[in-house]
Amino acid sequence: MKISTVSVYAAAAALSVALSVSSTFAQSPSNTPGGQVGTSTTPAGEFLVDSQGNSLYVFANDTENHSNCTGDCETAWPPLKVQNGSIPYTPAATGDVQSTLLNTTLRPDGTTQVTYGGKPLYRYAGDKQPGQTKGQGLNQFGGIWNLVQPDGKVLTGSSSPSPSPSP
Image (tube, rainbow, N blue to C red; front, side):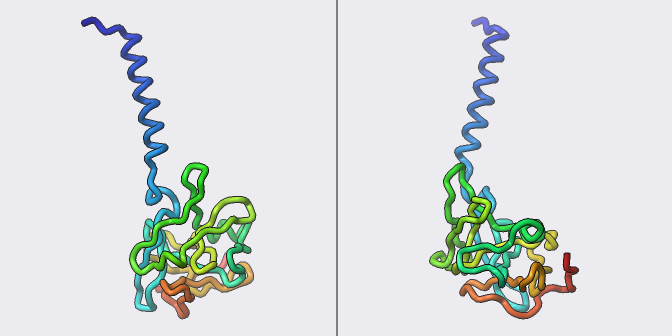
């Protein structure tokens, strides 16, 4: 059987398209930002983390299901957003996370942010690796930032090994 060069190129192109389409649709919630919310523990207590182990914080100036952190605030405190294609979803709860407290809310820019007990969740840009809690107790952008416990209450006290500078 003789295979032409055109047939080989056509087959390669078709395989490339098939692979890119399947990877787009096979993406699970755990592979997208905010896919899972779990817990971690420090000497100060247990708190929420994202699927990569990054600490999650709440902002005292937010109101229930509404973020007041935009612009420069959003750069320093990236919101935990979720998106699966064009359909927002609620991430999975793991560890001691209470799935009944996990939900989402629409941000002012139209994106979907994860909430816990009605409080929007954020990461801190100063936490450079999973498990760091340098944002705990910081007073930035007009309010206090705290880690959140599995019961939905804020973790009080400092769990940071050293103070973090304010932006």
